[in-house]
Length: 404
Image (tube, one colour):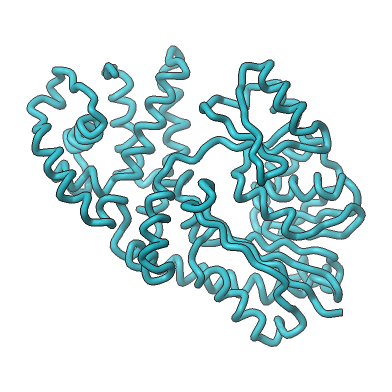
């Protein structure tokens, strides 16, 4: 591979914004890719993938490069040079990366690779927590799997098209896909492509949604004609999936504390041809009280640490703090306690997170079931999804029914 100066400089700019300015990696990539309209798909791919790779392995690369925060521009070039050497890329004769000690880099890599928290690049506290929560064997596998680049997965909008027909239409638009055996609505792209410019996307024939995330809506066991509440809807990826499973029949109430997210959902419902969704902002407890005992089904896709989705948000490793984890566990229990009152007798609810930690998952469900509010509920089934086993995001879901 030949390195091009303008592309490498764009990577350095991106790393500076992520590491020094604390900006989110996905937003930075979006911004940086607009620097030069002449960049083609391969150029853009190099910038995005190289930046993400260095963010993933920040701890390993910065320790090999012997640089510390805040990183000067020459420090970031040293980190980039480490990445290139370890990839076997011939370094050009640029002053920014002159005299790179290639043999020393390889020697340090061999030495540091023996230590999991450095090799897989996690802060000490996450590495310790992962091992104590999951056991050494599972955390060894999971910490590695969460560093693998997330594949692009589509979910077929079955209100408009079958998976087989979607596959054909995308092939006609030059996008190859493969159907995933255990995920009835999913298509995976063997090669990364910009799917948002396709006619199929503009016509609402699919949404981009990880395969693990596609397991959550079916777990709720909805039927057409029911009253279903998605109480932490966000921008509505799972809401839209629920709508397809309900065949656009019945009432689907999408709630969130952020109005801006629900506005995005409204745009998506129009594109998807979904017309049984009613959005409601949770401004105070009244919005919840109005629905007490009314819902046949309730989805609680609770806020969480996001440790299961590090594949697609690698910078979250460096942004997450122990205090946030403690705070979010309080929010999760509060959501279970207050929102569960919306389920009517005989109804069901799913509590889900994109975390792999038992303390955010089964422990929260057990605490809820042992509480006064949870006395009316019974756990029917639960599922832990690990990236190391599935190849997709880490997730947890628990189905509970209300006695009636």
